[in-house]
Length: 97
Length: 250
Picture 1 (spheres, one colour):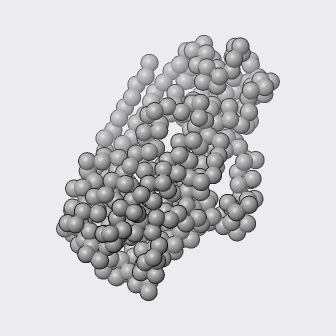
Picture 2 (picture 1 turned 60 degrees about the vertical axis):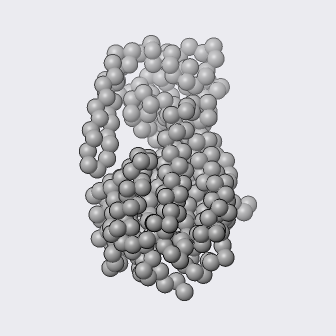
Picture 3 (picture 1 turned 30 degrees about the horizontal axis):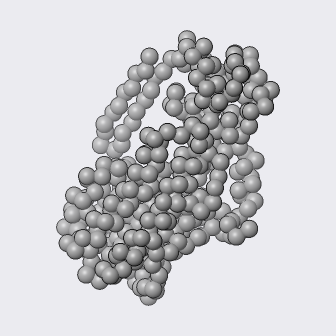
C-alpha cells in the first residue's frame, strides 16, 4: 500500500510516503534493481559474499531505498550492513510485512 | 571597475550555497538583487544579509516554467530592467546509470538546464533587458567535464549547460549580452554534504586529496561572478571557467 500525502504549502512541496512492503517482494525487487543474476536474496544473504556487490551496487541500494521508502541512507551507514536482514533493520523493520 | 551600482541582477538558487553567497557578495558591489528560490523563510534570511539596496525576492519553484515570465515582469516593474542573471539553482542526484529513468532525467534537466535557459531567453526580450546589455552566468560543475560513477544525470545536465551557453552566447552577442559558465570543483555547501553522504568514504577522501588548494568556499565562486558581471570581463563570452583548486589539472 502506498499512501502519498502531498502538502502544497506556501514554502515548498513536501511529500511523504508511508510504505509497507512484503519481504519476498523486497528481496525480488532489490535483486532485480541490482541486476544480481541467478542470485536469490533472502534474509540471511550476506551481501559481502556476492561478487557483484561493489560501490556501484551500494549506490543502487541507496537509490532503491530512497525510491521505495523515501529514506535517505548514507554510504557510511550502508558500509556497516552485512546481511539483507541488517539492511532491513536499517530501513526499519516496521516498513515490512 | 567592480562597481555594479544600478545593475539589477537575478539570482536563482539564492537561498543556499553558491547562489546565496553570490547574492550577498554582489550586493556589496552596489547591485540590486532579485532573489529566486523555493524556500521563503530562507530567502528572507538572505535578504536580510544583503547590503542596502532595492532588493526583492520571489519564492518560486523554477520548474513551474510558465511562472518565469510573470516573475521577471514583476521584477522589472519593481527594480528596473535586468543587467545580469546568475543561474545557481541546481539539484544533484547519485543514481547508477542502469537505475536511471526518464522522470529522473527530466527532473534534473528541468532545474539544472531548462529553467535557466528560460530565464535567459525571457530576460533577453527588449522590454526586460537593460539598454546597456547584460551578463548571464550559469553555474555548471567540474562534473560537467569529468565523469563520476553514479552521476550520469548530474554530469550530463551540467555538461548540457556548457554546450548551450556557447550557442546562446553567439546568438545574444549582438544584443550586448555576454553569457558564460562557471564550473566549480568541490565547494563547501549543503549539496556537497549530500553528495559526500552518498559516496563511500574512500571516494570522498580521494576527492579531497585531489584538490591541491583544498576544497573551495562559495565566496571563491562569488568573486568570479562579480568579475563576470563587471565591465572588466567585457571581452569574455561563451566560455566555461573552471574554478576547482587544481582538481582537474592532474
